Image (tube, rainbow, N blue to C red):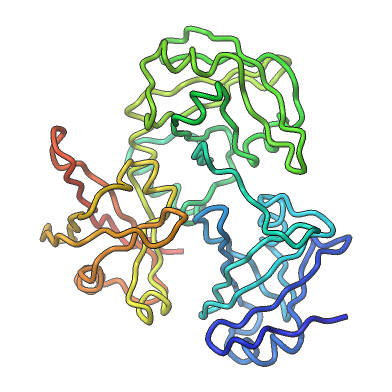
Length: 355
């Protein structure tokens, strides 16, 4: 039985229960499609963007008629969706949907992001590598290489003496449901033996315990430290190598954004939660935008929502105009700390990013 859309005229909704075989595709209800989508897309080349409360990633999913196909399976897998769950789609305009995931009890699924884990591609530090990454990576997203992830040391994971690993990282490297010793190597290659296990819930999240606090203290890693780990062995005893702090900083400081009609209509441009937290700027009130000519514009930085996104002040419009960024175009920014002894940060325009 096909579902009908909600009645909100500004941000219409539809929902679908997940039935066996849902990983291959998801159908948009006919009534919703006819009223809000049909005639607004490019035939044969339509791509929708999906967002959720679990992360700041824009998931690119192909729309073939009323069917969400290529890219949908990755979204569903990353959100650990299962038969019996319910997904609610809110249309925010310009083929952008906010997706809320509900369990069989019709309660919203809570995604534990307490440990601020961010999966990334293999470590690359120079500007040429950053350009290459943009070819395969969406905003805040991941590439096909799942050998590395970034995590933040928090008061919570220190007190619990445990660290959750990203779901995609665990799944891609065969660590799901593993219970075994795991070795952490510090930057000098000195080993610490911990235990790898999984949380016996519907998500089966993998985590390391019994030594995480000791590893951090011994290596001078306090709360709010940002660490990059690389999997160097996934055999009987997995081995994670802690990368240098300079590498971790390099991975975090670049950001790719896309200017959409939604940004202009609502007069807002936001920095993703993962970028904000990885760089420790969640408490900043101002930031300086540096355009391609080196001209600086100081603008406000305000909390956008409870998920940690930060909204730039009105100067972002002029910043985009000066840099020649048009609707639908992506551009790369680099976060720079102006002086090591101050909290002043700059967001410098690097270049446009072309498909």
